[in-house]
Length: 389
Image 1 (tube, rainbow, N blue to C red):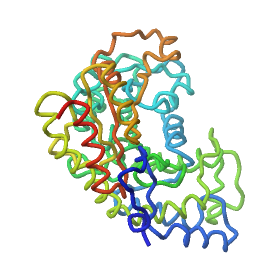
Image 2 (cartoon, one colour):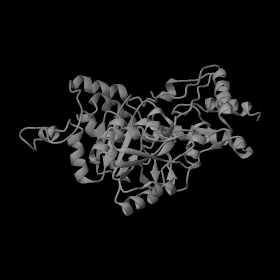
Image 3 (cartoon, rainbow, N blue to C red):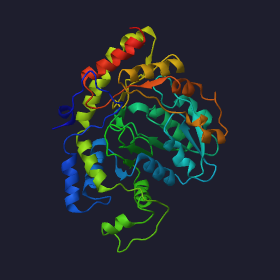
Image 4 (tube, one colour):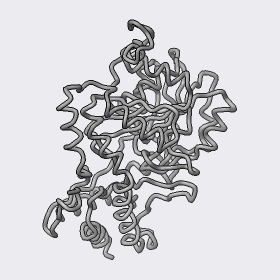
């Protein structure tokens, strides 16, 4: 029995912001791992997950990691950054995007975002490129692709590496290509807050054979242990820099059930997303709120449905209004350039006006597979009533 059949939300029940979805196969797969007594990483279920992702997304190499943060750290290590090398990232992202490179003592240069998608503004990247720039790290916000053709052209022009943070972009595409497979390296998240979940977990992707070989060593504490287990060497030893980035096969067992249900999960999320769009269209037409624009050449995975409201005070009052109705709506992020660490880098408030504008006005509405039509209608109705519609 799947999650939709197991769960029913009544009119008076609290609607959470997120509720991880179960396909019904998770327990069986986890039980298989328990019976095998083989819990460590890169086991049978890890290999099945990696093979499924490679085949579906057309990636030459997919390697499971403990988190998207871990995948980003693997990518940063593979960039061979020297102190004071520069990495371009959007300020409107989770801290891991910048922290992975800052750990390598690189300088993080923040670029503003587009108001229509909240993705990095590709037209502002070139002005941020300097003689020490080595990497561009676009973040595919809410499962909508950045303008990757323009970004890849800039990278080719200036000899830069592109690391895609596709934490929110699993199973979404840009011009028919899956997010995370377009740049030199890509990183996925399978955290509880994402579309396909393993509690924690992530993946590192690349189509570059040499990067794939080195990533295997980096994520195995810098050793060639994986080659040893495949019988390719008679002993394993310390080969490179690295750390313990390999996910347990217990996590992979749960993840496989989720990945096998990708189409089902995406369709359920898409149904809720589309219903929100119709129900709130009158507010958009009246100029009371803005919603994310999805370019025609992008196919989203329906990771988030958000609105932008008039000002920070309106946001606070709307979230409080929804809370009183038993609806959990949230916002994020505190822009990284204005964070305490960002300020130590010489950044200041006012330098990224679109980022700051959107960060102060965004409201993220509940969206998850299994969110029922009546739940969407209840949330949308509460939003409309707040604005007097």
